[in-house]
Amino acid sequence: MKPHVFVIPLLALTALAGCFMSTEPRIAAGVLLADGPVAFCLPDEDPCQTGLPDGDGYLIQSEDEDEEDVRLRFEALTEVDGVVIYLSETELSDEADRAWTYLVARSAGETPDGLAQFDLMMPSCSDLPPEQGERFGIVHADAYSCTVTDLEGFRAYLIETYTDDFADPAWWADED
Image (cartoon, rainbow, N blue to C red; front, side, top):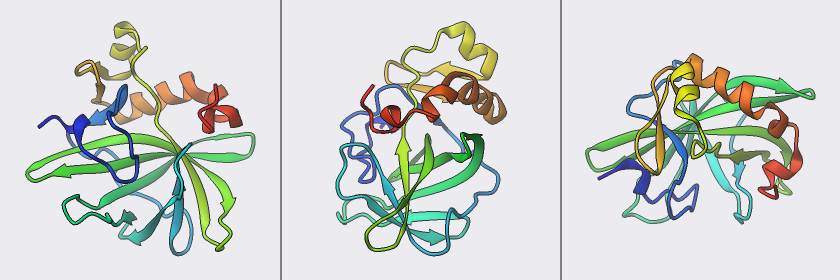
């Protein structure tokens, strides 16, 4: 089964069109974003999902016993207007198949319950020109995804391509 067609409770997306993926984990050591549980929010996704600290990342437990729990790990990517932007590596699995997909995150204050809240967005590779992909170690895998082969190159691509978006609240709300 191709990893981009997994059902992901956190993302609640029907197809991960244009997502960045890897066949192996690339973040060496994750960082915790706050003390205790964290609320992860996607645009148009209500309610936010609660991630429980789990080693050097977070676990979002699936409400469906037929679906795997979602594991997320983070590392600081860049800082924009005084706000740290994090790169997230999310482990996806379905029986014996495993893949990792990448999101970006930023602090969004607190939930009414007092949990640290983070907005998540999925950068898109659908308009990545092949020559730019080669420069950054990113390869179009199929019509739905790109494969990250070099984490440092991918980080450089995100910073070069998305810094203006990282500063734009409309981008985080998926309004642009």
